[in-house]
Length: 116
Image 1 (tube, helix red, strand yellow):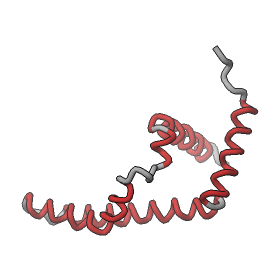
Image 2 (cartoon, rainbow, N blue to C red):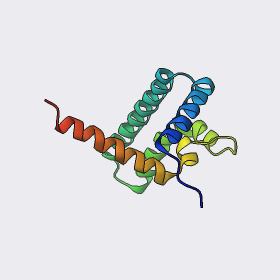
Image 3 (tube, rainbow, N blue to C red):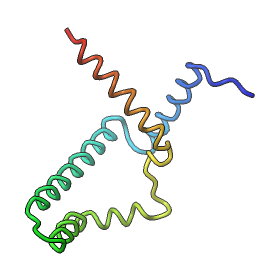
């Protein structure tokens, strides 16, 4: 059975992967900008859907609210269903992504709790 990678080996592997991502997908600021745009788009459509749901009085109106919310994103949704489209979280694995979120969120929260 092989030994788990050392901290240095993990760092070197991560650095190489990040360099490859920068060449293939853009620098950190560009990737962060796309992430920010994605979150804003998601929040915008989520809020529109929530607002529409506050006014529905029937199942038909609920269905229409869902259709209206989905329609502007349908082309993108169809793209995500293609075999050549992959979300990074799918490749990393949901458990890994959730663990990363928990670790980073907790670390940031601790920093905020202990700020002077």
